[in-house]
Image: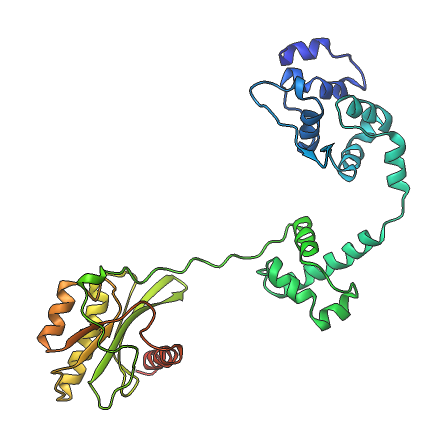
Length: 328
């Protein structure tokens, strides 16, 4: 049956558009009624669904899935002025979405339940907290915020379950901002091609230029991610060389090393026997970087993943770098 055939066979008058709803399974016409009613029609009348779009009949504890009464009533409200309540209920029931006019009127005359009233209070509180926190909170942090003592005293709804927060935020169309994926700074070279670990996680030195530690980190800026290479003297916790770049080529780490060598040699320091410790990043295992270490007679040391320095040391290194940039 085509759309033209449906137009010829359907009766004229108030019920013509409603009867098209019952013919949707045979005609395959996409009619302007909610998606949940289309799904409910397919579930109720599987034999009339087109073979090109098969729909399985899921069961929930032995009973058929049906559209929520609240959504069906919302659909009736949107069309009752044009067609009336009883004709709509009749056509919906014939299409498999069963609802009686008495059910519709009883739901409309019923006073709001305690859950509905509580939901309205929580929705107002969720909207306020979401707006006050720059519209970035997700369900996990929103759940924590709503159950804080001051927030619980303000909304007076008691403890709020996380599933309730998820449901209400979904109704309000609110969602949190996902954290951007951090860039990867280390692409490790094969372990068997790396020098031995001469430090063994003992990051201590008794004199300057005895042990240098090098690594690459990243900083978020308004224009995107920027990579920063450090060369730090463990004895003084001073950054003796650094470089920034938007890429992770060997030149990033090599420029930081050349800056450190130039500064120390300008001060008359002898770098013979210096231990240069780094991870297994390909920048530090490149031929050019190894040649630069050999030129200053330094000894390369490569550690395992994540053992370069403690977090407190890197925090001090980062703050020193930013201070150096702010006060040249």
